[in-house]
Image (cartoon, rainbow, N blue to C red; front, top):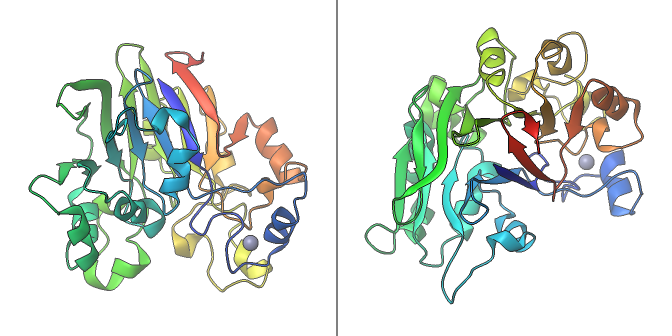
Length: 313
Ligand SMILES: [Zn+2]
C-alpha cells in the first residue's frame, strides 16, 4: 500500500492566518527547525494508479498539485477514485466544495457525517449539478466494505470505520443534538493482497481499550497529534479551551497518548493533525525528541510511505 501525507496540520494549518504564537512567528521567518504544514489529509493507493483521499482539506487544490501521482492523465481525468471522511469538521470536508468542476465524486462517510454536510447546505448544490454527480457510500461502524474504482471494479483496498471518542463539529453542535458514535470515526484501510492495514485516527478524545485494540490490528498508525498538553492554548494566552474540550487527547503527560500507546506493537506510528501551537513542530524541542525516542514519527507534508504486512517496505 502506498501512503502519501498531503497535509499534516490541524485545522488552521501552520502557520495559521491569525496566529502569532512562537511557532507561527518562527515558521513565517523561515527558522530551520520548523516547517510549514497544510491541513491534514492523506492519500492511499493499492496500485499507485488509483488513489483515495482520507479527508478533503480546505487546501486540497494545492495538495493535489504537490503530488504528481494525483495529476490528471487526460483532458478531463483524476486518479482520485474516492474520498473518505473521518468526521464533519470543516478542515476535513470543506475541500469537497473545491472539487466541484463537474467531476463525479465518490464519497465514503457515516450517515451522520454525510447528513451534517449535505442537509441545509445550499453550497452542496454545486456537487449536484447532474444526476449521479456525487455518490455517497455509507460507512457502517465495524463493517468493512470494498473501496471501488470509478468503473466500480474493486480497488484492492477495503475500509472499516471504527467509532472514536470525539464530538460533533462546532458548527453542527446545535443541530445534531446528542453526540453519536458516528460523529467521529477512525479508518482501518486494508490491502488484503499484501496483508497490510493502515489505521487512520486523526481525531480522538481518549485512548480507550477499544481504540487500542483497533490500532493493534494495523502495521501503520496515524494518530491525533493536535496538542502536546491539555492546557496548551491557555498557557500561550490563545484561548480558554482545553484539549479535552475540543475532543483531542494530548500527547504528553501520564494521561497522554504517548503513555497510553507505550505497549502498542505497531511498527510504524505517526502523529498527524498537529496544531500550530504544538512544541513537537520544533524538530529540536525536548517534546519532539521524546516523541521520536518513543518510536513515533512526526508527520509532515510530502511524506511517502510504502507498506507491506510487516511495516515499511
Ligand atoms: Zn500559531
